[in-house]
Length: 382
Image 1 (cartoon, rainbow, N blue to C red):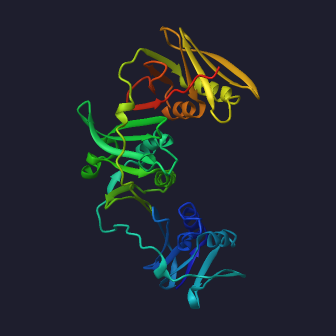
Image 2: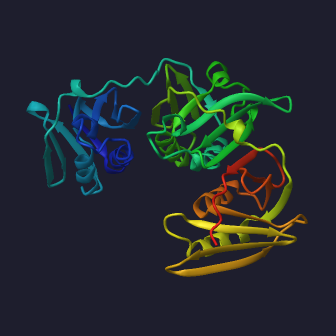
């Protein structure tokens, strides 16, 4: 294998692989990247067996071939090279010589046959997806997914197709058992042709949190003229954008019946200003206890009082104007949960719906019901 490639292209591709590779030393091969030179392009592969990534970039190839090298070291070497053309030359025993001008490195390589095989389903039909809509939906739900990998069926976002107000929609749901977020989008908004792998989405699929974090990085990339396409196949979800293909293993578990957590008998409705409330929550949470992060919200006619105390640090209190005319009610929350929720809703006005002090609390945009969030209250801290 022998090729020359631009500094910018190879650095960008290797940098993207860094968050995919497995840094634990249980399986050393998972801390590597495979570099394949063929047909005038370089393919760089990375995988941790749950997520796979292929980056493709043009290169001047003299001899086709492939090698496997340590992902972190090859990236660290390349990014410190002169910002000019960089040459890769495969020597005996899979060693790779990397050079530019007077700078020369030699890296120990591995047998490409040891690298895990990744199926990118290149011969399958991918469907176009609105990347901005998908990114917005993930931004409003992914925060609520459990980060605890032991809670397998909660460690991701549930995608499924359903009907609402006689319109077909895609619904995303995430929950960690303490908070929940669900958002609806008409299928025509996320896919212009009005369909999106109906067989899989009728049943519903769970995308793991880590895979979706990588997907959001892909969605954030600005690649002129590129569109996002999607395929769900054999327990894998795949996304293509520009020169990148991301493959994510779906979670093969049943998502819980989240609708049971949504209270139906509502006694109180409150409307708050999201910007001023979010700022106040952040301010007062500074003095909340480190472990419980407990913060109290007291709703009374026209007024919201936000309060937190800490026997070691002190206490903080702030009052805000709200739209409410009912009986006073006091609720305790984990400050982190309510801040994340208010921040995710991204609406000027937020509607809060309360059944009682012990039931889950609903938060949603005041103007529509497309995005609905749930937070479980906690014991009030005096």
